[in-house]
Length: 78
Image (cartoon, rainbow, N blue to C red):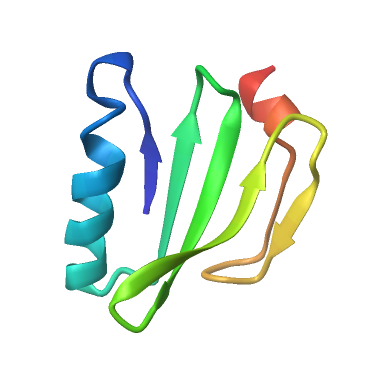
């Protein structure tokens, strides 16, 4: 699950949706924050998410879960 934060809901969405997605059993939740230019990668551990990475421009990150992906936030926020 990917979510792009909006300025108007940045305080509510990451808290409420993190809970809702964990209850639904979604294995990963990525939060894209255009204002901070970060991507936060969360992974479900039991009933809660744990932070796997907070990526900023210039950080190259690779994962094989849920699919093989290499990402550089600098290209996302260009």
